[in-house]
Amino acid sequence: MLLGALGFSTDLAIDLGTANTCVYAPGRGIVLNEPSVVAYNTKYNRIEAVGTQAREMIGRTPRDLVAIRPLRDGVIADFEAAERMLTDFIRRANRRNGWIRPRVVVGVPAEITQVERRAVRESTLRARASEVYLVDEPVAAAIGAGLPITEPTGNMIVDIGGGTTDIAVVSLAGMVYRKSVRVAGDEMDEAIVDYMKKAHGLLIGLRTAELIKIGIGSAAPLDQPMMMEVRGRHITQGLPKSIPVTDSEIRDALRPTVDIIVSAVRDGLETIPPELSADIYDRGVVITGGGALLRNLAKRLREDTNLPVLIAEDPLTSVVLGAGRMLSNIGLLKKLAMS
Image (cartoon, rainbow, N blue to C red; front, side):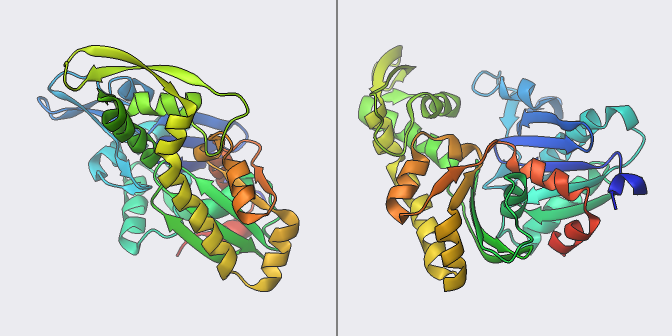
């Protein structure tokens, strides 16, 4: 039975990510995809902007304006900012029926604690949700990637987000194996910031580091070398400076973070039952999340595991699409939702 038939037409699915928050509405698809950032005015003790507008202020704000990321490592670090951000996003996504309090499905990392789980639930309820279902992000990602999770076969999903990398093996609508490591896209950005400071004496911000990662970052050698001009402030001179950086340099900077992710995947493969190992050998590993877009990451995983590795069709939105599909299957949603 469709939940829409039960009055669920205003319900929402949310991928509450460290870097970005996506909102899905049944019948309308993804209605919002914004950075998980809040701009807070310390002088007047109020929030000035949320999402894209707030992100544009990072590194450029006056003294009284602070850009806050309410989530860290996939969980809420600033409750007030998270609540205000969720309230704004839910209001915008549900603009047509602003007076109705929607039921909300939220994707969360696989191994968050009971306290962290309660924080997400309570913040979402205070953001005008009538009811909250929490679901594991890797399970939602597997559904969003089109994997047959209700069948008696093993499906391995690796969801590399901003704050966490979630690894899961799903069979018969349940998680046979789960692992969450708090190493993902944010750590890659921080590694690039550290490298530029140590190797070139150049101070750059996290936004610039992310652009470098997107522009020339890779997990394995590229067929064609790449280079990028990076602008920042020189440590000793104290002046703006531009320095050319190669893809091999950035690959070296990212290697420790990539190694942790690859090692976590190998640990999962070594832990699961042999029967499911055979399924994964046949079906391969699916990677999703923003980190899946790092150049040659699938190639690196293939080389280290000797398994087929596929990138989800739309890795950035797999979690919210999967959570959204649960809204049309109340039985599956109740089975997969965290207690």
